[in-house]
Amino acid sequence: MWLQLKIHTSDKYVDVLSDALSDLGASAVTFIDNADKPIYEPDLGTTPFWQQTTVVGLFASDIDTESVIAQLRLKVGEDIALTWSSERLKDRVWEKAWMDHFDPIKFGENLWICPSWRAIPDPQGINILLDPGLAFGTGTHPTTALCLEALSRRSLNHTKVIDYGCGSGILAIASIKLGASNAWCIDNDPQALIATKENAKKNNVEKKCQLYMADAFSRLCSQHDSTVRADLLIANILAKPLTELAAYFSRLLNHGAEIMLSGILENQEQEIVQAYKPWFDITDVSKAEEWLCIEAKRGNSV
Image (cartoon, rainbow, N blue to C red):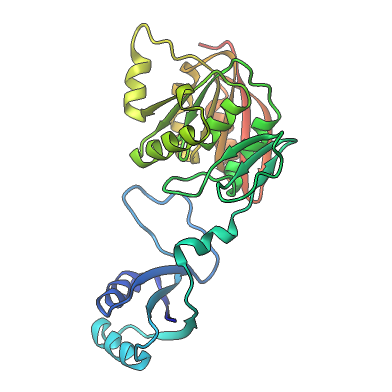
């Protein structure tokens, strides 16, 4: 058995309460948004919390809750009001419990994302084996799902693809499974490239994936004899970097090539459209929840 101690507070006191719970022996400390208000695109170098946050400490079941609260009051001072609740949890194999929440997901007519511990629903379909891990991208988030749906509608035979901000590699792997001849997988997080390499190997497409850190790829593309010219570029990142990368992306694509942009909120649509207008013609905008995927075709502009 475990005891889960929940402290309801504001963003101002999250750090001090988290440190205090750890000092008092919490096996884990997590955070919950009380108001269900997601935080998008925080400023660089910041780690913002929600205005109303619950700090959750997980303790062994035999602790004296009142004693922990008393010690917590001493640690954080009288200025911080402590509103708390507790709950006892049954023992589980916690490292496997999360697996219950992941099932195969279908996109389009026959594209499947399948966790490795589940049976493949359609052996004749296009199946990607991918488990949740260190990097973003399992198909469950609307931005990734929008890209997978758009990919499932395409004929990608013999195309060259760039997956910019590859995360888990899911979009590059899907592109190859759908017929692409190769994919450049780009990210600025080394963990993403590790995850992409592992997932590509799991899906037997590692020979068609070329992995680069973003700065190394930029240097490669700046070479006079660079052969990097793609037929499709996918970037599931965020609106601010998408805006800044518009001109750069245009130089990576053949004339008539397509681009697929996601990680965009509804109120950011016009910002993205204007940024890409000098080089691209918008062909489609799809929506899931508050997120958009913008598809466009590279024109003949320089």
